Image (cartoon, rainbow, N blue to C red):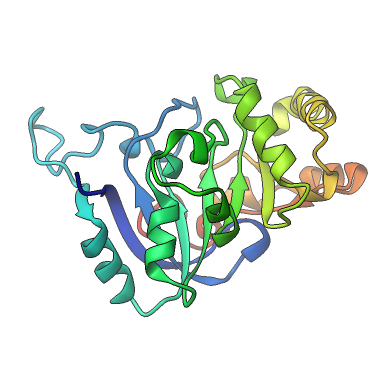
Length: 243
């Protein structure tokens, strides 16, 4: 049976978050997610029926494309951008190891994952060495997302981060509940022995104004030794797709 990849969209952009902020990239957004975060800004990736071409028709044709490995590689190579952002949805539901091995060393990638899965145990033909082919931006979802941590999966990523220095952890926080959110984050990183300097904090918000008023988050990051990340794409374009 051939491997297929459900792709919602592919477009060039500047990475809007994290350690590669501002880097020219090609975003590859995978369809299907295993979580339903209350503040999710990509609900159109959740299921097989989340993003129809005509939303007035229950059975309308879907926007996502089912790619073969070969057709996805061809699409990526045609864009002439060699750094990929593998996002979703939840990209680890797909065989990212096979994709990156097939693309070869001329491509780099970072994966935006919710950290609830252990790829080499759950994805056929994902090799343990495949973790080294990508940077991993793990964004655990806790109570402010209406979701729960997957303890074994988070333990896996935390342990892997001790030897793989391309693993980072990003937490979305709310100004109105910052004391509660910080308390949960501190408890998590203590329990899983995650280094503070691997942690990014990002303010919840999908408007330009929400991203401009974050001095409070600057202060929290300094206080605890965390890294701060804005949402560059929101600052530049507002809440739009394809940027």
